Image (cartoon, rainbow over all chains, first blue to last red; front, side, top):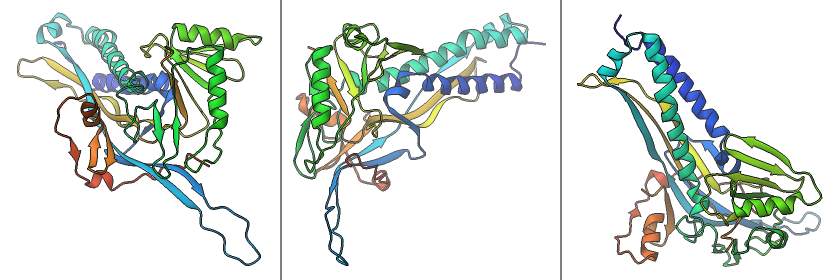
Length: 305
Length: 49
């Protein structure tokens, strides 16, 4: 029998691609750092809530005071499609007369490359939220994610950016900032910025590891391409997708994460098609949006220089 | 190629347009009409307690 893909082989490849792809995202740094989810809304509106005020004592049988919810900036996230395809020419198919060999060739050589490239694309793109966070990646107030922000509802301000190098001084600065953080109404909104982020193997990561080790033994774990160190208080996440050697970031893992990645369609292997020249095309695509769609009150970042 | 549009007094303006304007690149502001995109407002969880 001339080499061809029977339908059930297509199904197997498709199924393994989709499963692997989902698992790869779950094991990636973006799953640790960002608010990753699935959405049915191609476009979605977000409103930052900046605080509430009005709780007070009340006398017997008196009406309770209204709590005013301070609504902040609004933004809209729109999804974009991404993808790529692999091609098998007629000649390649004729060279592989045994369908099992052909199946193996496709699976072992081409599909994994496609999967890997797609997952790499997703991480690289979404990580621009941090890599461009001091410049072009914006928060819904139009200011860089790490910059001097102003609450829309009251005009109060906070600055979640720094230039302090990673190390002991950075942790002191971070803890002071976190403990003194206030919401739009100047009410105490304590943060625990206990997850630190730096480039894998960078100067910043090494400096943090030295400080975090201190008297404690660091618990280390590796998930996918991400190294995670924990000293009981802080967790240091090292990802290769950060571009700067000195920059570091921190966020409060217990609070809502305003850096959002929403998949409208997770990476999926599409139906195989035959072109006029008999080349077999197997596309893989997905659709997502990402951004700081809400005010990044729970994030802090430093260029480190 | 913007995925993010910010509500301004001109309507929804793309993050790319804001960056371009800031960097001095003369571009026509990309203003998104408020259509169904804005109809669904997630009313996200309160960040400040």
